[in-house]
Structures are given as structure tokens and as C-alpha cells.
Image (cartoon, rainbow, N blue to C red; front, side):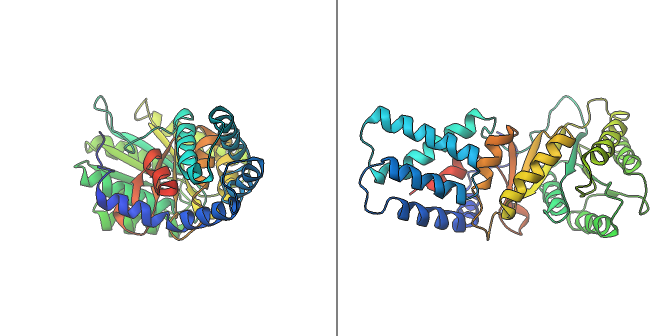
Length: 317
């Protein structure tokens, strides 16, 4: 078990509420797809394919899911439409398990070294700084000493926002003047964390999708800077994506995974959108674990991603 008790009733309720719009949309589409049908035949599968694609699951992942259901129908000979939700739940959960999106408890800090260094990347507006603040709060709730690094030095608003979160959570923020070298800020952040015996340091980076070469060079400089302080750093490169943008999130994931070695993802803003299916597609296509999902404004609404709980909320009865 990690720090956070994912299966508490409060968190399950938050998950159900956060995915309500996606579930309502998907269920409505499935109901129309099977209308007048008693068994899962070719017409139902064609309609189901359209349902999944229009629910932002993504074309490749949708075709994979449909293929799995076709095999199950062929094997079982008779599959009623009333079984479809359960079959979808099982096949998608299996798919996520196979594709490195196993049940997690978020970031589980090692006991053999500290600080645990997390670089956070993603475009402006996806909830990157908010995710950092909520992560810092969760680590602090678990009794960890946390430092934040304001290495997005291109926007004054980014530094100010991180400072506000630092004050709210009561953790120190390492920053420099606007326009400072981001790698220097990252170096100072990890150095301060080491000097003060911190368990975790979370570093914000510039949220720009400029050309891939520029992004790659900048992130490489930051990585090299933190390695000078802690040879194993960074422990994680967390990509934050806005789930409410649907297919746009796929494109951002593509760009950032080409630019740097992303080790984990957080998908935010899933409450209030019907595009929650994007979590399934991104988990499948990029083979990178989704560690957190954002389901609201509250500190506790950033939850460790648990594929079975997620799929149960989406396709359960």
C-alpha cells in the first residue's frame, strides 16, 4: 500500500461524481447502439466502435477493444446486449493492465534515497501548477518534507501561482528572478532540498509547446542540472494533460513524449466533461502509467489512478 487509501468511500464517491458526465454520455450512446438488438452482432459492434471513438477513447484503442469483444463473442457464441457493459468493463480493465497502467497508489517514495525529485511538464492551462500544489499537500499529509521549484521562469504568473500554492500548503518555494535560467532554478531547488533534509522536491517547468528541439534542449539542461546534485534525479517526469480537451491531450502527449523521457502522467479536469474516455486511450497508446487523475477543485480531488476503480465507475451498474 502507498500513502493514500484510494478505496475510501469518500474517494469512491468523488470518482463516481467526477466521471458522471462521461458515464452518462457513454451509457446514452451504448443504449442507442444496442436499441432493438438482443445479441451483440456486427451491427452492434459497428455502432459500439463509433461510441468509443466519439467518447475520445481514440481510434487505435477502440479497434483493439472491438477486436477483443469480437473474440469473446466468437468464443461464447451467444452474448446478449445486456452483458455489454460488463464485457466492456472487463476488456478495458485487462487492456489497461497489459499496457503498464497497473493499479497504483500514486508515487511511492523509496526508502533508500531522498529527496525524490519530480519534474512536472505540460502546456500552460492544463492544471500543471495546481497539480503540483495538490501533490505537495498530499505528500505533506503523509508526513513528508516537501520543497517546490519554480523553474517556469518565462511567465511571472507561473512563479506567483506556485508561490501562492506554497503558502497555502505551507511548503517552501525556491525561485529566482523572471527570465532566469530554468536549469539554475532546478539546481537550486534540489540543492536546498538536500541541504534541508527534504523527502520530495517537485519542480515546475515552462509550459510551452515550442519546437521540439527547443523543448528537448531545455528539459535536457534541467535534467543535467538536477543530476549534479542527486545522481539518480529526476526520479519521475510527470506529464500533466487536460482531459477535457479530448484528442488535443493525445497530441500534447505525443509532443512531450518525443521531447523528453516521460515516466508518468496526470490527467486533470475530468469532472465537468464527457471526455473521460481519453484516459483509456492515453493509457493504452503511450504505455506510460497514468499515476493521477483530477476530479475537482479540492485538495483531495487529485486521486491516484486505479484502473479497476476507474473502469468500474465508468461501466459498472
